[in-house]
Length: 638
Image 1 (tube, rainbow, N blue to C red):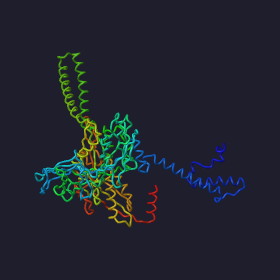
Image 2: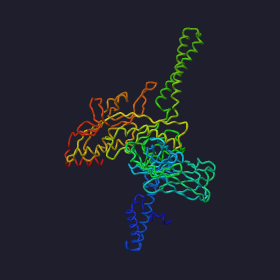
Image 3: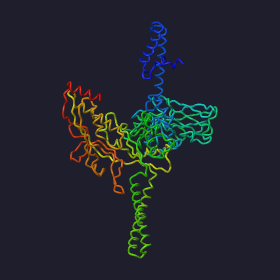
Image 4: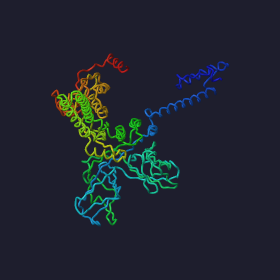
């Protein structure tokens, strides 16, 4: 056939740029026109058709490349593509999560004539914080809560979530596997957990998968919509019931602002910081302005408000999706807590993998081996020299002692195994979400790095409320150890640059590094060298850390620095055999306020006129001339 003739194979796979395709096509057409004795120009009809055809080909190649790029979750750039690929793995990208906490409503003693001397506060009461201007909704276990006004300072504690409860409605079609998309208003998001679905007035339960729905069970799936909002999926009759034709499908959800809704206690304790938007009522139904008789304070911090899951986190989490939809092992916990987008570092350690368990098991196995060996030796002596011989009696004493040792370590092992069903959580909060724009890693409060007891309780409650925790598995949040270090460096800078300006940039960039660092093995000095060398005006840098002398109480041996100057993120304990076993419960702080093992005191600040968190020494200036500029260009091109 003609298309197999080498004469017509003028396009090459190595030349697929538009300009190359165009030139190859022109050369081919020109050659053929010359063969018939005609002159070819781009103004001729054939030339115009050729340009149109090549432009079509160019667009085809573009869309092929674009489709291939968007089919890979690591290279896709469109949110819809990333979410779509993630949904294939079973991953459901997290929506915004409402800040939650507890408010205390206290009677202020205002004289008021109320029937029954009791005021009723309805469920979903809205109250606005004048601190941030956002609205919060009271989430009650029943339809209402009552406040007794017979005594001053009587109070009720109420759980709240930031946002407003909204509703949308659709109509059932009677078809199997019905699906509906409900969009929310721009600027706010549907809460990741607070979504309820009602069909003909009856609430249907939510399931993670259609396979979890039983025969004609009144249940549905709620997923994050690829184009926004939420998608609701119903069953096929065998797995989940089918909403009948004409049925009313009502979706109730909380529309939240996410992270801006977080409030710490001190800023909102006074009455003027809260305003009720919903009226209460007396027992006879009379409306009552709650602002006149109730003062509001925060009982538990309003925390854990987060924005929707960013694309980079979706790319990281989707490959680790657990199709069991349960928190069955350490990886499931890392995935679940990672989706919350509230922590810099998330790790989980199963109870049976703790040092105490391994130590007891090693000791038990050693004792049992010794007992079995002694038992064999005793039986051999009894069979050869008799039970009454001195050798047999001495061996019998050894056997009894070995057996006692077995019982001892067996009991200890059983005690240690009682927490084998516990998953220990290593959590470092995202400090960027806890500090103001004017603060950085070196100037924020040290409490910003530590989870409070209220936050730990709220995390465990959140795990419980998710419905994914296995009953036989408990959770515990590890108490971390915080050794302290400071950052020292010596610089050579280029002529024409100010040291103070370079210092500010270095402080800013190293602050960002430490705030976002997720390493669990070490903090290498080479990371800091790489950061500083990329600062404009820096020619050469030497970096080293200094350590708090009290770090020895954590690391036991040394102060947390290895022979090469890197900060170690693990300490060692000795196991049953005398071996060193690594334990990773360390989160280092590059903060002063200590005396080093070299007897040098560092202040917890970033003042440049004293030894502090970051200390920069200028040891030389490089002249800016032809040779230094040429060498800089050579190095940057290597």
